[in-house]
Image (cartoon, rainbow, N blue to C red; front, side, top):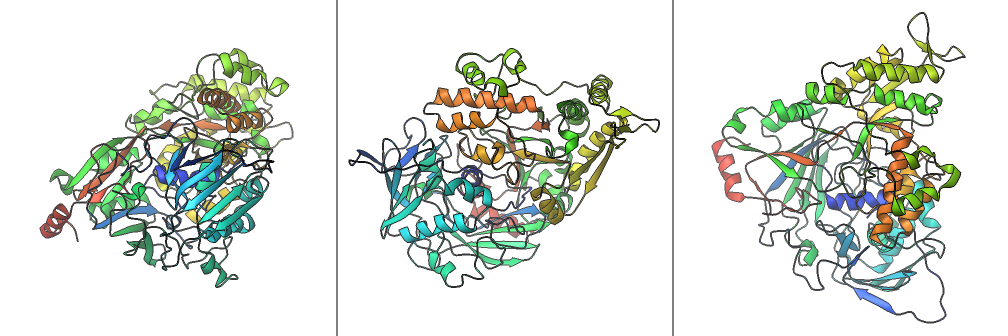
Length: 635
């Protein structure tokens, strides 16, 4: 897990389980603790850590079972992304970080792609902790090296922890500062984290173990220009398998495998990191990127546009079998995507207005007419998992909700969870839903005037701007905006450049945007950044700013959960409360990966459930790559 970093949008490579772990520290922090004790406690020493239950892989395991341990090394992975970049520092709110900028930094632990919330030693070969988990000690691998050849030491880990508190994102620093009072180097390769006594322990080890490790010497060499809170094009020094080779601003980034990478022998790395180089091509929009893929400018494309998947893959290379079009199962939680309302806007303070915004969206028509019927409608923040709230609350979930007292809307106890409304595919405007929506707006005091526009009692026109930066979304968003206008709302669609969109989103300077909350099968302290009260005003991971006294205790319960049933009860309760607040219009989810690639890639026979693994589990088939080049199909 890693602390929050600046988002670098990629339209082609969905973050795999490793990146989810990394982004997870961005949005999930140790609720950590540690106190003085009178006697030395009994400790557990292990090669890994699982938040609930036993580890799947025993000490000394050779490799993860989902990898190909004989995967050949060589060749180039190339894919595209959309937008711009002006920095290789992903840990600041300023600027736009280049793709994979954070991947050069390794952490003490590494996630398994086939176990939820299970992690094994990477920079650390073992860890020690008492039953109370008041502290944790990591025993580091003495052979670990940064890309400049210097050793990775406990002092580097302590430095990394401290600089993230001093110069990292405010939401991260504020949360961790109170919960991790001290990180201490006990020796050159032994580091100890102490945790505050007032916070639950669940996930603290995996969260601390996911902190990215920086080179203290590199930062100390030029502290004025090498800050974590400022953008810079100079890449830092990490210990990962790839280093930056070259870049052309807003056009291309190339990483090459470090020939002296220290960690190829480590069991969590066997069968991974198989490319000699990784090239990312930047395009202004996905249409241009598609043309680049067809021309062979890059060789793998993870598709996220239904129209493209249904219609664009009809070109000679596909028909000749030179490009493969495949679908792969995605066992992780679908991103909770939709049209997000900025809850700091006065117009959205009334839940009747928010429900009206939901009713204006016609999923059935959009999916059938514009998305080729390829998606499913999303209802839950944990859609399709055991954590999704269903039916009437009962058992432990009911007890959890009742414990919220007057902070809870009483209807939540007696009604099934809010579901995305049904709609009809026959026409863009579902008249039944629009009538319901307009009645809600009337009740909320937004009446239709003689000019057909809705105004409140003060005479202010109901204005809503939908901010976007992706041209491919326009065909989806404009019908939604048109439906709002039919209801008398002065709705508008405003597409801006990616840099402006990033700035306005970070500053929460918008009415509505298309966005998503990334959820987890083992949610923990990251929920404070997504829905917590303290971080609501500025967290980049809570675009809506939603929070409340009916949310915070549920997050506390999730973080404090010591058993899987306790976790499930609290998450289902939170799902129920979030859905009832109607702060976003739930749209769609896929539940699979769409991937097209030139026929030069190979992958393990059985891919893991929680990662596609394109960037670290797949490899290049040298014979097929050479045949493509010899045929003239690729440059």
